[in-house]
Image (cartoon, rainbow, N blue to C red; front, side):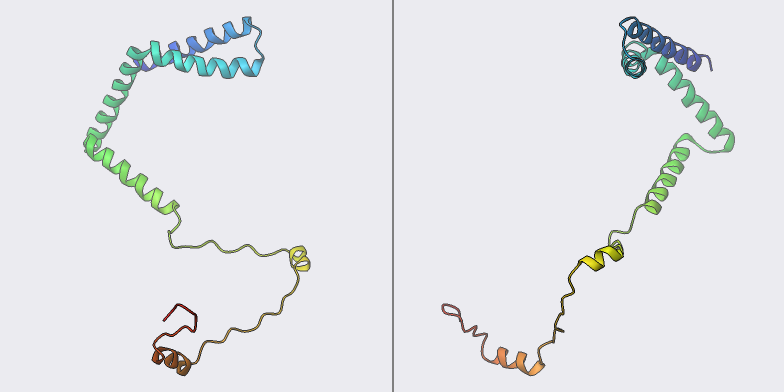
Length: 145
């Protein structure tokens, strides 16, 4: 727990230090807080690599010990997490062939749209299709067979 605590305290100290510098420069409170967060994040990435690596290795060791107590290897634990994430992703993702249902038109939209009478479409009779095929596909257009 000590490396993680050390890293957290160092990050907090960087944040407070940058916030103090921005306050001295008379930055607005929101700008100072957001700026201190961003700047301290960048500085901690550059200057706190050692403590960050120690904290990460300590956390990895704790996860492995906990998994060993449960009888799982670190690899099996990682695969279990990946499988759970994949199941959650597939459950949340919409089916690729599903189409969203159209939204119902409001009464105001229906009242504004002009009503147009549409003629019913009739399928060609099978005899007419056969006659066209027997003609050899002549289109009646110049330059076309």
